[in-house]
Image (cartoon, rainbow, N blue to C red; front, side):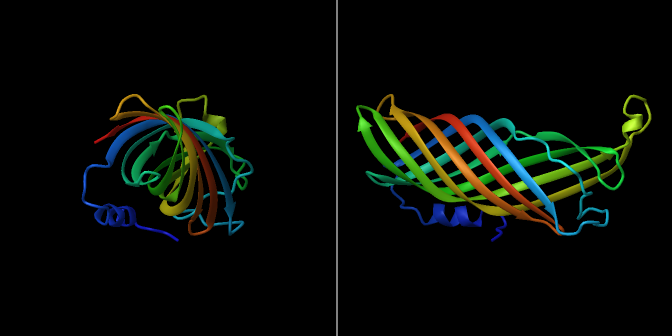
Length: 221
């Protein structure tokens, strides 16, 4: 199911309890491994802004930086509702176009917003374990540039054509983490999350897995 960005998250924010005693906000940063598996519905698609050229291999899994801002509200001693926004580093890979034999470059830019329920379990001292389940709305911008490989080492204009796709889709989010309370208000966090994204363009299916490992801090009001 596809969404047009922040409506779902806005609804959750507006319907959250009004009391500020359990609110918190924070930042995360770390690495995200992104793996996209493209498959064409049409083996010989027309060129244009809504299609891409067939290719015979994908760029390997890549690790890029990811940054996020988040805010949450503790609904009780062992559960919280959290929303956030993340931006991921652009990924780039080399490809070979099947129907021309020319080389190519593909870039993928992604970002997402999410809403999740977070279970909280103190384990020892100021340490706590957490697990999260929620949904994210991902935005993806995919660009494919076909180049004439014979001209790459010259000053000639070697770009033959470019294809661009942009869309958004919902994804399930699963995560686990640990945290340490430095004080009554400041908390250090370590999280591992997995997103399962399924994009569908005009003639292109993209199954996209993303796993992030992040460190962050939260301030509790």
